Image (cartoon, rainbow, N blue to C red; front, side, top):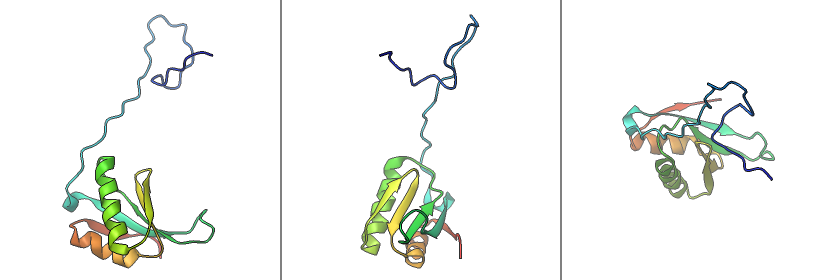
Length: 114
């Protein structure tokens, strides 16, 4: 089986002798200070069998800092959750409590949804 080159984007083969492949760049952005971050807090039930989760979006920074913030929120709320795709999911409806915690940590918080 042929070895796949994952660095090439959107091109399988080219007959142009001067063609150069586009290369995917994976630069992570430095973490902004909390006072410059605007986080969106909302409640989500979609595709979760009717169970509510609190969703925190809009974090700008590296994954390690996002995981650290997720761990802090899970500990303060005393529930489980996960960090994936640049979002923090906290089990249950903790929108008000999480908003208060984030404001105390220095983040700008906007509530999304009803």
